[in-house]
Amino acid sequence: MNEFTLPEELPQNNWYKAIDRRISRRRYHDTPLTRQELDELKEDIAELDNCLSFSRIVFSQEGFSQAVKTLLGSYGLVTGASSFAAILADTQADSFRANVEAGMLGEALILAATARGLNTCWVGGMLKKSEIRERLNLGHNEEVLAITPLGIAHNKPTLAEKLLKRVISSRSRKPLEELVEKYQPESYPDWVNTALESARLAPSAANQQPWRFEVYPDAGKLILRSSRDNKKHGISPYLDCGIALQHLLLGAENSLRRQRSDWNDETADIKTSRKQKRPVYILLEPPAVAEVFLSSGE
Ligand SMILES: Cc1cc2nc3c(=O)[nH]c(=O)nc-3n(C[C@H](O)[C@H](O)[C@H](O)COP(=O)(O)O)c2cc1C
Image 1 (tube, rainbow, N blue to C red):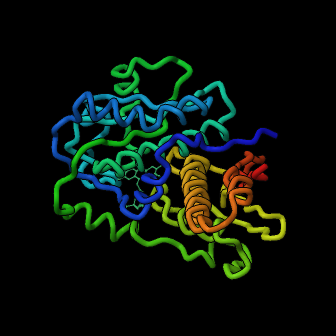
Image 2 (cartoon, rainbow, N blue to C red):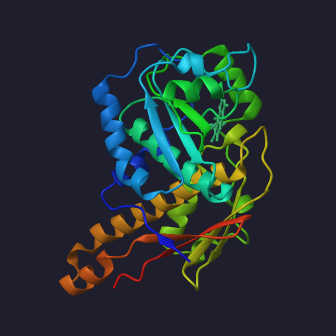
Image 3 (cartoon, helix red, strand yellow):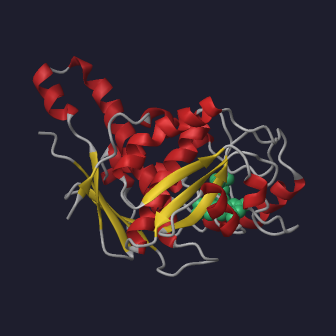
């Protein structure tokens, strides 16, 4: 079984802080991002993009409007933006793994953009996939799973945005009591509670939140599984679960970093041994998605 850890160099602290601020925005000013802004975003996620084998992200300075269908009144009317990024999966890879990786990578980009003051929205439906393929010059083994506009949204949410929010109650999330089997936060270590709270806020297609968690405090691990195995509206639940996994890891990492800064009074020996602890994940067999635990710190 392969163990994975997010590269330490990633701006994880900024991404963690962006979790609270991120919301989907759907009506944009048409000013494209500058080359420099796009390069900064690429740089933010480069380390992660390199280490995930079956997903990658391609940026386009223009063409968002031509990449989405704009049928009036449909779910997911996202308009006005120029720049966008496409989240791609390798069609030759195992689809479960490619979707999980795409969720992780795509959400890293969404949080990186949020941290830089940009607005975003995962768009997995209503895509004009052949236009996107052509514009981005994609290989025949690459599938577009979703895109996100990258830009600045209009200040006030539009009527359509407000209606959509009401229909899919996009700001509401299921309580952890419903998401975690036999939820007993008082018996969990801080990194597990912070990870769960972060994952709960993750975005998902139509806000379905198709993720469930099991915590094994004695074994020091938690398990993420999908609540279903089938696609809805062409979107795999494993894409959503990859997004939740990214949030889990960022939450866990943030808790460990906070603890380290509390340990300033401790001896150098203890600090060095604990310093190495990082959240690690192993992918499982679907519908289970991943096991998350801490590295031994040795
Ligand atoms: C994989 C995925 C696909 C999505 N596709 C669309 C879409 O096609 N149109 C849309 O308006 N929103 C789409 N969304 C945004 C969700 O509706 C939104 O994340 C969810 O309602 C939670 O709201 P929030 O992002 O404001 O927290 C998608 C989200 C995800 C994660």
